[in-house]
Image (cartoon, rainbow, N blue to C red; front, side, top):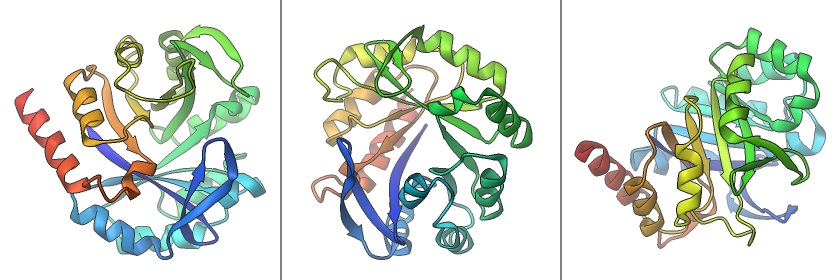
Length: 246
């Protein structure tokens, strides 16, 4: 079980984008190396990088920075999303030291690409999926009549290794104090699950850990990671205590 900070990179800087408008963003750190030093000192060993420029341009952009981060922090696990639209673009990230490729569910519209990436990068492919009250919303928030369990079984057949899941209640506000979300995750397949969003405080984290499904492998920490009231070292310690008690 891991806590995984999310680092969004644009023009070489750490930023935070607003969910409703990807082009509205705030610079949270001029030098990602410095924030990662703090994360590692707090007990973090894996991060999720979003190459925002790559999303905008359709191909990997912040590759030199990612390579630099891996060189400076070789034991830090890196998973990256953004701009993975071909096997060649996936190779660019892997060559920069990325450990896992995070694909958007939009890649399902290009089944042959998904198959090729899964074959070429075995055990390195993660799929991002959104759910709404237990059902999938694959593109543009549209509903899909598969459950997460059915969908993850299908992805496992392709060779997808892990899932990053965001559950969005009808209210549009993600919060993992919603027990329904925990039930959705716990009823999913045997693919390792990483939940994204919804942690706004240590109390939220404590609640999710108390109700942790067996296949929950990690929690992605986004905006909250930059909240001075959220102590990352305390969060890591809480996770360690929960794991020792289980």
